[in-house]
Image 1 (cartoon, one colour):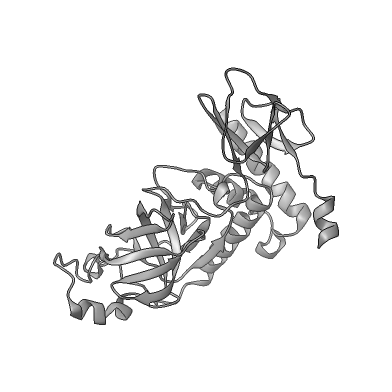
Image 2: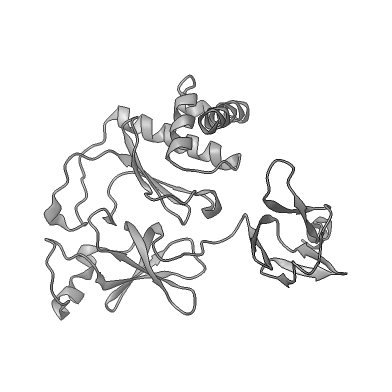
Length: 293
């Protein structure tokens, strides 16, 4: 272990990217020399002989005189309003503990969920006793960050009908830094499947549902058998997500759809072959550039 650590360069310097105005923390590049307009080193940086050096590899963010480096590989740091996909790990008094890829388990309070039937009333002792009927250990949920506790733990809520317990589908766990922040993270893709791009890096793929019963209050999960064609579409999307993630492409509805379309000439099982993966991602990036241009 010690020989591995000694071979890793300890300094990652800041350099100006040629193609973009964003600074990226990288190894062996020229540092930013501290001047009067850059006086406050922030998170992920340190001062070395009047030069500001990045201590992690990542994207440099500048706010007036403060420079921070946001690491590319990190746990999820939630903000209010973020959409997350999580797994129930524990049922406690008046709350559920949820694994959301954060440093600490998130909390879903009993008062922060819709009661079945959409009733609006105070939660009683009877509701506490039936908590496991709503959500139990191992259940997957989609939720929104309601607030952040002082220790950094997240408080979630599922008060909207679009959030709640997830039924049949596939969970793909990726890096939170690859998920692009958008107005909506719920997408019904034209290929016949739907996707929830959780800000925490958990992505949920599932067959596009028909009309859902509103009375269920977010706890309705269909257990109807999923057709073979739907399963193939979901498997293809899952492999496309892994391909985009391996090549560090930002994930949002357009990039996922373009990647899906680029992969149609290959079989689902072949998508994860390195040479096929590279070809599909290159085609996706070309389409994205054409769209932006």
